[in-house]
Length: 299
Length: 299
Image (cartoon, rainbow over all chains, first blue to last red; front, side):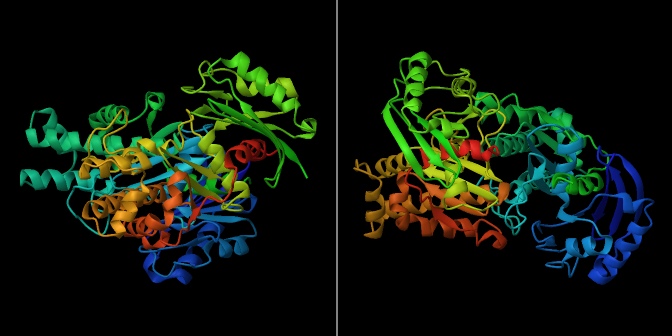
């Protein structure tokens, strides 16, 4: 069975793993990424970690997941807020030359989507749409086992989709952007604003709604409608075979997902009502998805 | 050079053509489709038309464009409002058996998109998003030269995307659906409602806005913002290499497209501001795109 090198690079930590084509982690090394110290240090560290992986030479290719949009054709980051100095840096080229095998770069949400599409809940399906909801909201369409990263690496940068124009301006995102309205951060902010009370986490909103708290019920209802509209919009664009949902908010999925699906149905054609909403199942989608990048390029 | 048979089937008329792989019409037959008389009559008529095409036997495959969503894997229509009896009818299979070559079926907006992607304004680009705006609004994402038709054939059925929740309920579509707000029909309806006056066509709104009519200016501004938001949403989902625009409203493109692009930029990340908005250039995208279906399947 073929194997691939996956690298999951963040601003703080980095993981390198050898992964089989069916998504099993065969060997793994973790450590600090030295992300604030610039490309020279970061790259030297990663190269050393690769050489610590037993049998790395047997791998058929390298995939790297990074935080932020990527120019997948050039193999470079477009923006690198969490990895200073990496915007435009020839990341994939350098890895490819160093290790003598093809190397590919993509956004971390996109590689998580790819993992789910190739060896997770979307295995064997042609059109997979992955959404991750935690402090932010990200997503990615995977078609025929390849991420739709787009011209500028902004494919699946769904955070800024306007869900309702008539909301408050929160930050640099659009007024009514789905991330501000339906991320965990957004849900907490809206409940705190309306109740005038600080809460520990978003689970409180769902619990209080269940207990009959009118403000919590209102915030929860809007949350479900916002997300339902988001998925209905995605269905209009690409009508996926499956919606896969990941991210920290899914710990409370049983509390709000039925309401989201109900709203999705209310805003979409009956033909697409049977599209399944499935929770992401892989324990390590970031590192597995990175290793799947060469697979998605036919290696 | 290879050639393909394209069939552009409507409720009233049908065209059959032999088309070269670079999109030139080599031979063509037109006639009534007998669309209201059921599949037996429609299919017999099409078969006769194919045999009237000189050299049809030299073609490498058949593509058919039909009005309404299509199950592209099964080669059947999902809904057939304009072609009674065709929902679920084994259209592609029957054509394939009759003529001894592979046959494919897709939605007419999708095949127009495919034509533009393969031999029109989007030639050579990986991610093409086509939008047609006339009495209705349709669209299609084309990735790697293949239409993203989706699980139920609803990929690109963008008409129902909600652009603003706080609008009037117009018809069976969602409140604030882009088709009701930004199609030609929608623009005309909104101006007539506000002015209390019937107008001959949508061009009147743009002319009056230019002449300083306050109502026309308001309706035009909202129109541009609605469409700008629509394109910004599409960019968040798939970040296309190009937006290609077709449909009757493009006759007035010089009057409103600059405003749409300005709004698009106001609602999207600077990285995607350079995405070109290009008018569809092919004279016969329906029939050419149908013939491109076999090409998109590697024939």
